[in-house]
Length: 486
Image (cartoon, rainbow, N blue to C red; front, side, top):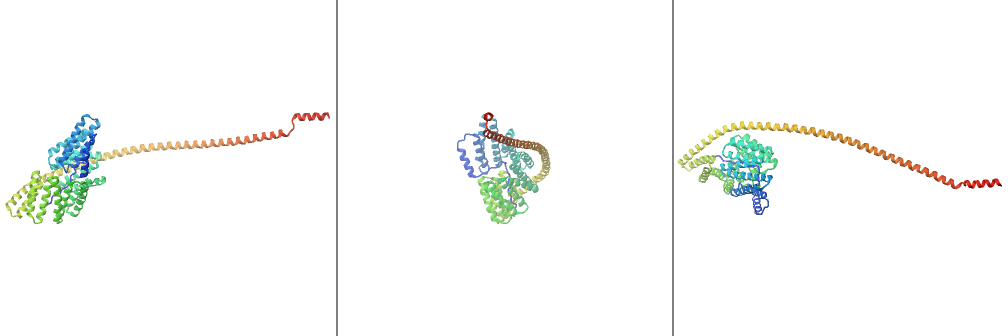
């Protein structure tokens, strides 16, 4: 009997860790008076996001409070604040839409996501536009409309690339891979899962890495590489435990259980199934419970315990009917036919076998449709990919031309600056040389003046000495007169 594996779909680009301690602290903070409505709105958004997978009722309550606060504040606020509160309402509708998607309320989910999209477009918030397109794509995926799902994923990816939102690009690559897995194109699926892994690894996004590891595990499981698949699932589980995401923990436990089933380690397989069952029960996740019960039933059949298997198969069947889970309905009827045969209840075995054939044929028709859709999607996808590559090449050419222009400007400016610098250096050196020459002339002038002064001083000194030793003219005259008389 086949086992049903879970693969991760990533709902939004804004990922927060749902740790109970953080939730408690936020709820405590929420009780304190807040002067600014925007602060309260952020606390409510964090709580609504963190609780969306584990407590739908609380998450919805907080999201509705955000809308109430934002609508009241919008009437008396500035343009900038108006944009903020419009985005707050959009984010709240994104969360409400995700919860409705979880609860298989697709028409309500559409309403919330489309309203979020309109609000995001009104304020041209490209990140929120990308989120809304992504989430609408998920709704179409859950309804098996893979062509529309891919179309919305590609729209979301376009906006994520425009703002270089790597987390969103990684999540969307993951979800596109999920479509290719579902339509049976494992080559393209692996390509996109690995692309998602590379981006998540680059930005150290543990939430995205957990999803990438799990989905790569599914690829390896489909190839029969169970040991390698187990390594990927274990890596995913380590990260989901660290992040505190219970839903993903349950999915990991379920997948690990199935690998051990194929490895023939049935007791270990059941141990992990019980762990998954406990979490799905706590989260009231009907799809998860339907899957884990049918998987556990397969194990009990192999262990030779058909009565236990029958009990689980009937529970899974009832849940699958409630949520119209066709894959599990088909698997349930197939297993029930085999179990009733083992228990010698031939009429029930035949009845269930006919129902199995009915669902199988219905799904085979869907598979045929999937093949047609796959061919169409591949054509459309390659066409859009080629257009995207062309647009990217055009951007690169324009960017290269702009870079070349910038380089020419930079080199021109640099050349002019170099000439100016050299001229300034020449002027400065000339000035310094002239200044040095002037200083030398002044020094020489001072030396000459000093020498001249010394000469003049010597002459004056000699004259004074001469004057001091020679008789005066009067004295010479008197002396000559006296000699003549004598």
